[in-house]
Image 1 (tube, helix red, strand yellow):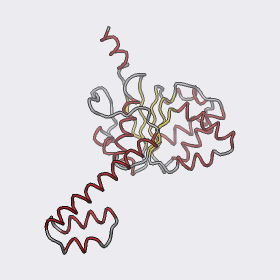
Image 2 (cartoon, one colour):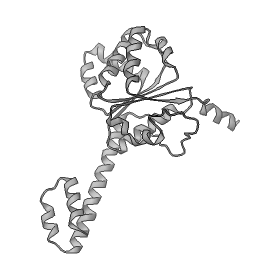
Image 3 (spheres, helix red, strand yellow):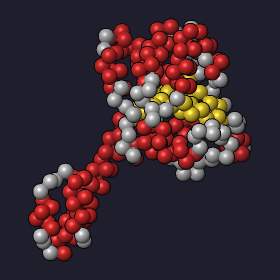
Image 4 (tube, rainbow, N blue to C red):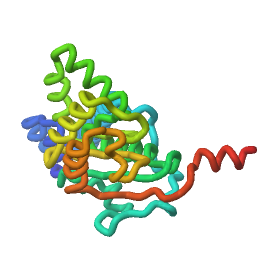
Length: 239
């Protein structure tokens, strides 16, 4: 086992001086040290992943194993490979997934969240109706700033199921403020069954809706799910 490999492991573990002793030792000790340090690094990665997944609030752990991409329409600036690479996160870009109910949007959002956690990124997953209720509760209790400060530390915010439940004025304004805080600072993933022109029916205020859509779309990769419900199709096949 060469000294450079062990030195790199020591660097990852942030143990500055022990490598000097190992470098002067025999081959057996070097091999043992390499296995020991490698095991420690892998253990830390597993623990880190476990914490990220737990903190993310992902309702179910989803992966891309067996996921069907055939009917999904990607924009020219973001194909399947770029989505999975998470390169867009470092550029603070958003991903908006638009399509019918049951076409795999939430599954894709959840699977992207898992991939992000595996790469050490922090994610916060919300069904948007639940987020709005949480924001309203925090606002009433007077501790919304603390809640929003936690959100600002996340690399990715996921807003799932935008369009299923309309919001009152207070809820819409609080959600807008979260999106505004994310603008060009964090990436946002949105899943929705509504075209942008229909969002006013959810947020009520035309100007607020336009401002919110403008911030989401400015640096966005818009992915279309034009198919019919996968869940319905599966249920019909079983019958």
